[in-house]
Length: 216
View 1 (cartoon, rainbow, N blue to C red):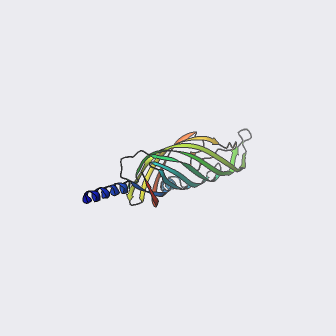
View 2 (view 1 turned 135 degrees about the vertical axis):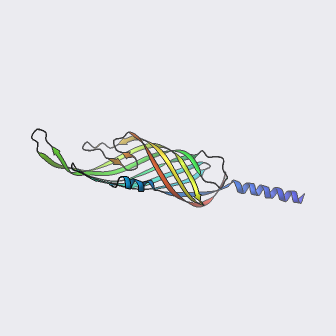
View 3 (view 1 turned 180 degrees about the vertical axis):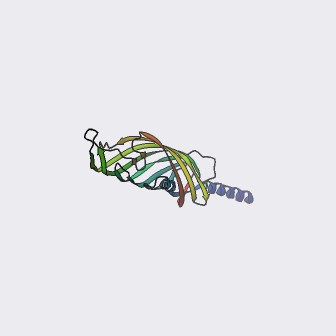
């Protein structure tokens, strides 16, 4: 009887240990911004991401970034600097896994906000009647933008506490400050300024920092 009791107790303790998950903060860097710089050297962007499991399969997530844009051609010289943030929730639909596995196949939603300063100088305008060339400039304008986005993607563990992940985003603009002189070419964190909705892509490398335990 004593032996059976010890076996039962050991089995219960092992089962409890299997059900314990380690709560952790996962911090990531969007490496797709490096490829963006190769394709569009006039645009420089930087983005960090963080998420944490607050309840089994539910993750609160936030993303912060900045962007600079410099463009010069025969018609005008354009400058834009801004920052952005997104906050939302992801749900892990990958349910059949061990308690100590933290990989994800997820769907989520975000709210995004961006603030942008942009201006243009050396603007050349030709008068079709008198045919002179007029040089002017646009003073710095401040633009605020708000949007929502649906996200879907994966986060896979390469090594212990080292993850890679990608996601697709469908963004819908809710509000953007109107500037009569010129629309922004790019809104940081959103994309093309003239688009009411668009598709985005991110590719991250994450480091997970264990913080504590919680039970399933």
